[in-house]
Amino acid sequence: MAAFITAPVTSLTTTHRLHTNGTKRTPTARTLTMNADQTKPIPANFGTTLKPLGNVSPSGRVIGSLPGDPNADKFKVTVHDPQRGTTYQCMVPKDRYIWYEMESQGFDVPASCRNGCCTTCAVKIDKGIVEQEEALGLLKEMRDKGYALLCVSFPRSDIVATLQSEDEVYMKQFGGSFEKGGVQWGGVMPEDD
Image (cartoon, rainbow, N blue to C red; front, side, top):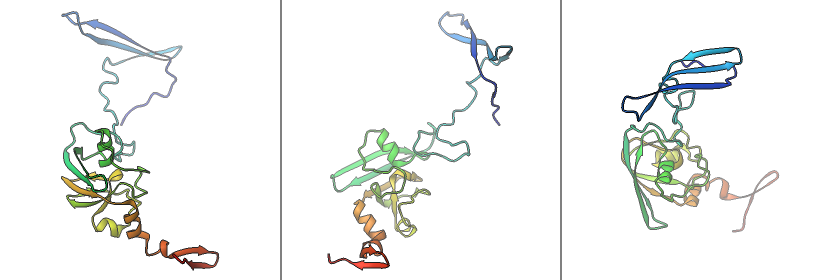
């Protein structure tokens, strides 16, 4: 468990010592002044022994939109975009959402909300496994049929996927209910188109 300093910090003084070769400086002692009358020495390695949170929230949940463990296992992800006639391919760490890693590597993969609510980044998984607990924009039936949202999908194996039309995925999910007709006070009013 980490300890937190709750008193106001007014200064941090570091004393350095030159190495015998005269090039590197290393801290020998640090003094943390918490207020005008309270000075306490702290270890020379203060701040260097703590692991950065990276993409892990304080509650321990992995946040896939942020870079994570540089040593995490990586999987080869291939995404075909039939509308643009392009194929994207890169290695994605298991603790990073596929879309965010592809964006960081310079790929222009379609996205809109980037939170798993719309279907702009929807793909059909042709091969492989993804974990997508936050895919609110996909019904369970669609996820069970192999659809995924890249912006909230962690790779769990090598992936081959094909981007889908946002409208097509929307219609497959909601076309049978929302698109039947206009709504009027008191019930549904069929449209002529």
